[in-house]
Image (cartoon, rainbow, N blue to C red; front, side, top):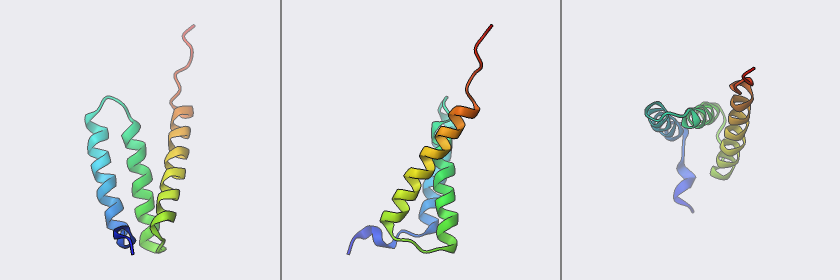
Length: 80
């Protein structure tokens, strides 16, 4: 039995809040996207219980997706 077997939704919300504070105090938005992914995993766990490995895999996949979308959406246009 691993100590990570008892990770629940509110743990992810604490991680999301911590990442949000870090994201707001740094000049980049990178931690804000990680915060959004952690909050989304917390909401998902509120409704569907998942094992820790699935939580991590979903977090990494969702974080990569959100960061990819943000990089595409916020890409600066070339200066003419």
